[in-house]
Image (cartoon, rainbow, N blue to C red; front, side, top):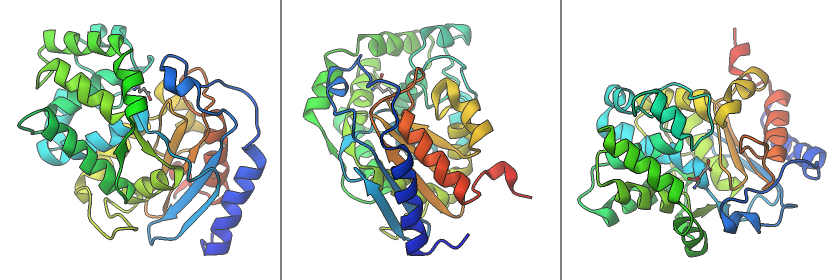
Length: 312
Ligand code: GLU
């Protein structure tokens, strides 16, 4: 398909027009901040690997990155420790259970299986080489900003809301520690993980991040190589396994693209070699994926024939 600027604009406009008012789902409520984000918001954006940008709706509304941050930290950690060590210490399989499942951890003797569930994400934070908490946090701000192509900031409101309520994650961090699967102080990992979920991003920034992964680690907006090219395939494999929580298999079956969603309502998908697509809308399905986001991204993927399992 011809991806010139006017076609890209038509893709986002059509997807937005078709799905931005679709009903169904509900805002995440277990984090108080997320419960009060206006549910009607809906935006969608595309960034191509050669730097073309198109967006529609609330694509520039800043929202909490949440679980999508796990992909950023994975990118930083895999570059530091290498793909073999990352796989050995964290894993590369779906858990088939909710993202904050303690049962999944117990079933696998403390091995998280995926860097994209809470247990694996906190263990991944702990793998980063950092001399103290603030250096660990700075490494995460740096990789998030590099991937989305512009400076990312912590939202004090989101962070406070999460830090005051993250008892379940603190429990998971101690279970990892007990299983020798935590590589820094467990409460430091939980604190920094909670902060990494509390930065604000827009759908356009997430589409830039997805385009960076589509371009083997080269950010088309800043022109910088952000992740080593040879690690991107492993990041995309992790996204395929667990990116849309326990609906990751359905997403692969129906859409056929590596993706990642967050309980803030964000969703991104990577069309390798071509472009990144991202959407934002707060109401979530039972697994934690944006209802409208999935529809908008799937629409665009279908229209451009992006399913990677269709390639002959
Ligand atoms: N901060 C959230 C948590 O740890 C992120 C969850 C998500 O987006 O999946 O529960």
